[in-house]
Length: 181
Image 1 (cartoon, one colour):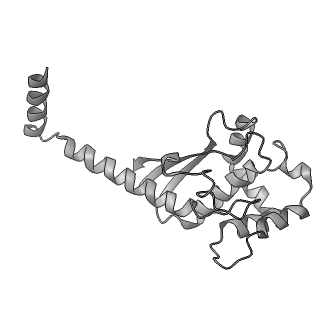
Image 2 (cartoon, rainbow, N blue to C red):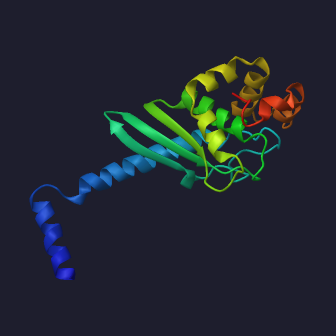
Image 3 (cartoon, one colour):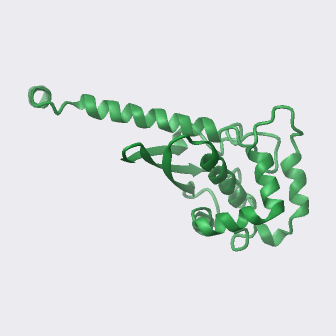
C-alpha cells in the first residue's frame, strides 16, 4: 500500500499536479482565516467587560475561509454564545457583521452562524444575522448602532461597561429572536 502511495505521489509531481499547489492554497486560506480572526477577536461582549475571544465566543477554529475566485473569499464564522438562552446573541452576530464589513481589505461574502447546539433559537438568529436587509435596518436604529459602535471599536481606555450601559436604552422586544432586525 505504501508503495502505491509513493508511486502516485511521484506521478502527480511528474505531471505538474503536485500537492504544492494545494498546500499553497491551504496555507493562503489559513492566513486569511487568521486575518479574519484578528479582526473579530477584539469585539467587546455587550454585557461583560471582556472581548469575544476572552469569553471563547469566538476562537481561531470558528473561522473558515474558502476561495471563490480571484481575490474573492467566502468567510464562514460559527460563534458560541456564553449561554444557550443568551438574549444578545443576535447583537453579537450584528457586531461580527459590521466589524468584518468595515475592516477586511479583500472582497468577501460573509456567513455568520451560531455553533450548532449552543443556543435555543439558533435557526431564527442565523436567518436574521445573514439577512442583509435586516442588518441594514438594525443599523438604522440609533440605540443599536451606538451599542455596536461601542462593542466593535478598539478602545483600550474606554469604560468597560459602555455596551452594557447602552442596553438600558433598548426595550426587551428589540432583543427577542423575531424583533432585533
